[in-house]
Length: 96
Image (cartoon, rainbow, N blue to C red; front, side, top):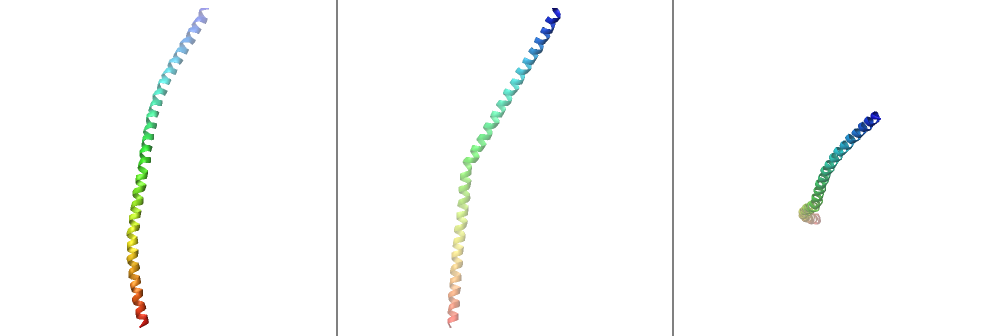
């Protein structure tokens, strides 16, 4: 009978140790979960900042492209005038 009681006591002690270990593991899991939550929140904030800044970047690029086209437009118009003058003079010489 005493041997059976000792076995039960040993089993109870083993169960108590297992429960304590499970509690410690749960505490570690809770800490890890909090850290992951903080990291996810940080990633979310970074994503929001990127998304908010993206339209501004696109708009700036479009403005730069528009400016470049405007510059090229005036250059092309100037070249067209030169070519037109040259062709007109060439036609004058041909008629003579």
